Length: 271
Image (cartoon, helix red, strand yellow):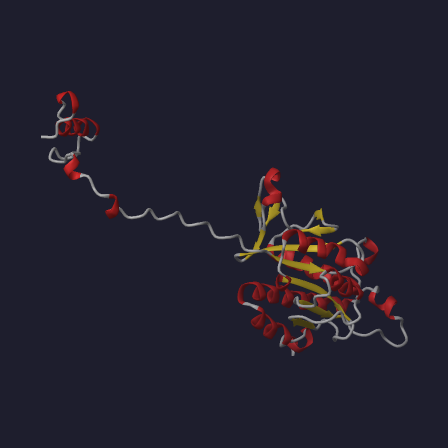
């Protein structure tokens, strides 16, 4: 018998309390000191699993010049590639942040409607990969002011920054995906590299616009529009570019580069 002060039988009292609080427990279960479990035999509580760290988004940047007079010109194919990606993925890029038309934290993202009050906290996705789309509005030659600010603010690794731009040295509508490299005389890329503190270690998708005909000045050529045939070829290249970006984000650089760099032109595809 477990008797405490004042003659109270604690064993009986504990059993009575258990019966009141836990009526379905068997009467034989007692809370007497003889049934206490030593601390040494208790397992250490397993801590709650920490939630996974959010994946850093990819930043997809197209270079070009803002304003209607530059729409549809050769120097703006980077903008057009971003527009093609946005249309294919249902992403709006009408908001303005970091001196750029921006596709992160928007009302419509991936075909879903979100509350405007919390939209700035949301991300867009391609597959299961968070992405941001940007078209710098700083004019081509100082594109790095916008791109550098975005990368710095969101702490995006440079290996997850894809810069898309026009290239005079590639045949028209030819795509080329590279893991890194220099600016190749492209002033927009020169500005981006400068704002990445000289780092060239970021992927880029080059879109060929060909060389100027005859003695035409390069500056005039890159600001010239496309004819009907060129537009058809370019739109076909944009379709390939959209698929290449999906492969890059979901399957990795090597598979995407193999797809892009071996892709046939519209003329070859038609033969």
